[in-house]
Length: 191
Image (cartoon, rainbow, N blue to C red; front, side, top):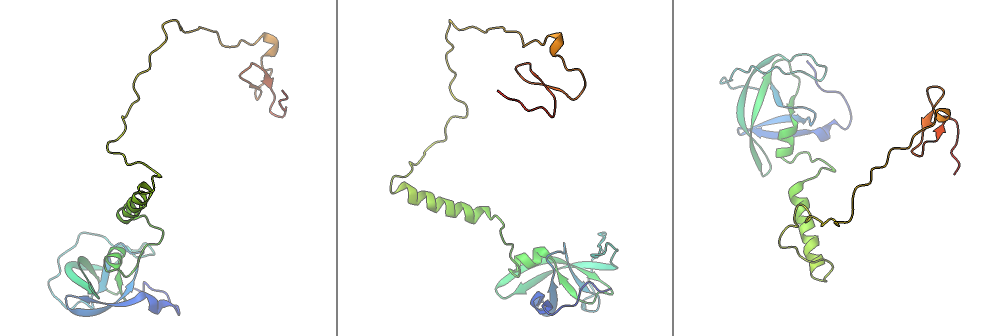
């Protein structure tokens, strides 16, 4: 089964990653949920059975042999991941989680709450020094204090505007404004 497409820029997506001290060439596949290697590449015999069903990009089931947990390393990055072994696979594929954890791909325009909050905190500190803003030691109350109602005020009961029979819409599709005016869809209001 072939899960790759030809192209002149493909070499940018190929990287050698150490899997338990053995160097394996992977195609970086940020669209893949898991990391897979072919049964030809896999030379160890201690596979764990897997009940998971893996599908290729075309939606067809892959012939899953099993899985194992291994240490993957690339440059200074070292991680442990589950790797699935698939027969009839032309190239080993490194899935999104492994690509990100090994710093082989990076998401552009993604929000990283931690680093963003540190940047915002630094900006806020710079604004406090020249008295642009004041520091707040405790949060404001969640609800404003209740207002006193004037004892002389009272609720006025006024009926909704009534339409006289001559103003009622003659057919469906007419609209009645808040003031009680009947307007046809094509008619423009002039005040």
